[in-house]
View: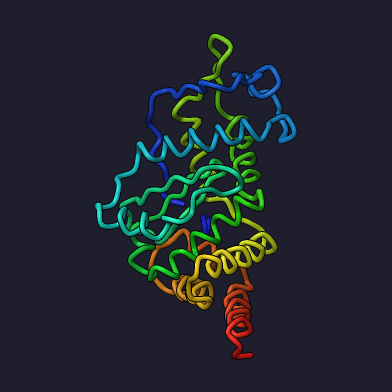
Amino acid sequence: MKRILTLLLGAAIACSCSTLSKINWDYDHLASAGGKAITAAMISDEQVTELCRQSVAYTDAQTPLAPAKYQQRLAKIMQNIKQVDGKPINYKVYRSNEVNACAYGDGSVRVNSALMDLMDDDELLAVIGHELGHVANKDSMKAMKRAYLGSAAREAIFAAGGYGQLAGTVLGDISEAYINAQFSQKQESNADEYGFQFTVDQGRDPYSMARSLEKLNSLSSGQQSSTLAKMFSSHPDSAQRAAKMRKKADKLTGKQ
């Protein structure tokens, strides 16, 4: 579902360089202007978290925010949710007609206004819970590594004073690859389970996970353009996933 999860726009590529202020990247091992081969094993989780932070900052700079009422609604929904995978959560709503949401490995959550228009509060929290499940299960970190590896082979990475800089074109490629990444059926199923429990733990309707999946499934067969819907429709078991979440809710509420 990614991203159902996950996100959020086909990033425009035009931005000044962004400095990696804290992490010393070893570019002799990671990449060079000549496009040296690199592997996922060479990139630490700390570096991937920084990649997430820079990618989110790049996307934020390219994307208009939704009106205040959307930000306020999301803040209310998320008021009791402070962290995921040990990382503080920060969130924003983008103004976009595309139904989508995404959670990054640094704790950033980005939601499109169209998704908020489609879902009620409980359903929206379930979708966000699903996305956070990808973070908690390390799916997002792996997806960001893949996005970086795909970009580093094509783009020059610069080093200055022992600290690195990523060009805007590189961040654009990484952001777009991450946003369009697809998770396996097992990863999606595990994220559904996380989202279900996450929603219940927040005192929300246990059927909200099932309802959100059903709505996204209906979009995937309709005419509305949606990265989320397209990704959802790419999984042949999408209807079964929704039915599974409804069955879990039935069991929890004693209807089964």
